[in-house]
Image (cartoon, rainbow, N blue to C red; front, top):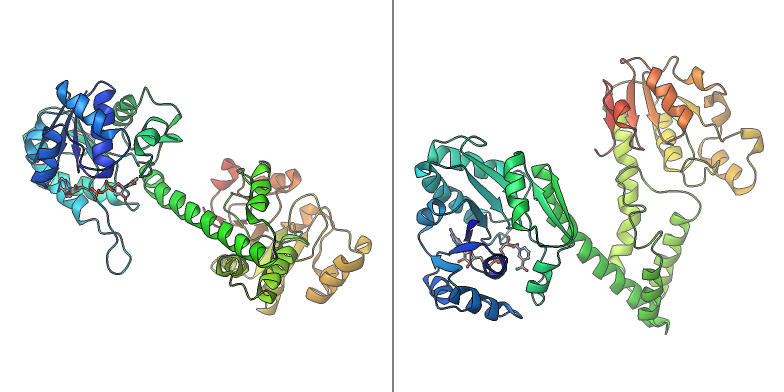
Length: 436
Ligand SMILES: NC(=O)c1ccc[n+]([C@@H]2O[C@H](COP(=O)([O-])OP(=O)(O)OC[C@H]3O[C@@H](n4cnc5c(N)ncnc54)[C@H](O)[C@@H]3O)[C@@H](O)[C@H]2O)c1
């Protein structure tokens, strides 16, 4: 395929070389005459393992050229890949001015182009950028999105230092698109590469890189804080994290990575507090670990606010324990929500198939007696009773029979979902998910 690549920095230079090596004809475009001259002289614009040989070899074979003439590059190619910089502004926002400048330039090329043109944005961009890019192209070119051209988001996952190796071994290839043909055309560029090709919504692809990199930063800071605590106690932090990483069921796994309600129960809050206090006693600052509980409290507030925004006063709860299949009420975030609502004058009814008040004992009973002393007056023993005389049902545990009740609720009842109900229930009128 004939490809133009805008931006001959780290991402652009690697893409020029690797796509040419994979059999494409590539035109590199940059505003820097120096970088254009470097590529035309068969030299890489960056210092990176293997890329200098690849550029030299592919240039010698005639598979690569470079220019400052953007319009010409658009006219001569089927796809344009955008790899210009997206640095931070002084206030921490993303500076997208280079991206939008390219949109104007691309518009000028597309104005004169007869064939359909695909633009794949490889730079890291905020959700909504592809739409704005497309409207600039439409305005400048007078052409129509998805009729004359398409915009696809195709984030790059390479790391400097191992960029060529990362290019050929991506964890996955991500394509955000509202145009199936354009997505297919971009996917075909990476046919030789391993890893799953995921085609998804534009905004999902656009936010992905931020989610990935923020998580990577979180991993580093978490590892460092654990290391700092261990070091103060003479514990080998590397051995600790090595063992930590061996647990592929709960630690390094998709488990717990589902957006939803706050955590609770008798272990997570207690042990989090324990590690925090240990760090405190050792005079070790652990701001990341300390922020976890704050974040959890905010998630409980979010649930209360979601219920308040329904502007209804009679609230039913399906499930009160911190997760399905248990009667453990200790530190259940739903208990805090109920307690808060009662304090604000709401009427509350609760059904939980696992809770028999007469069977509650020990710290579990003490906890609930302290937080909701008159819980027995709020509980209903028949699940079908719950739907009567309430305007809102909050679903807090995903039990099969709870879902059956929700299927039957009238559309006038608001469903507030903490557990991500199945799609059919999410489609109900007056449905609200906590964070989806
Ligand atoms: N560097 C990385 O490791 C890496 C990895 C993944 C994603 N990214 C993302 O990819 C994007 C590019 O990063 P980079 O490190 O390659 O940037 P870079 O600063 O090295 O290169 C950007 C290039 O774009 C050129 N440019 C600017 N305006 C232009 C225009 N109108 N037309 C043509 N060229 C223009 C600049 O002259 C420069 O050569 C960024 O969004 C970055 O966040 C970077």
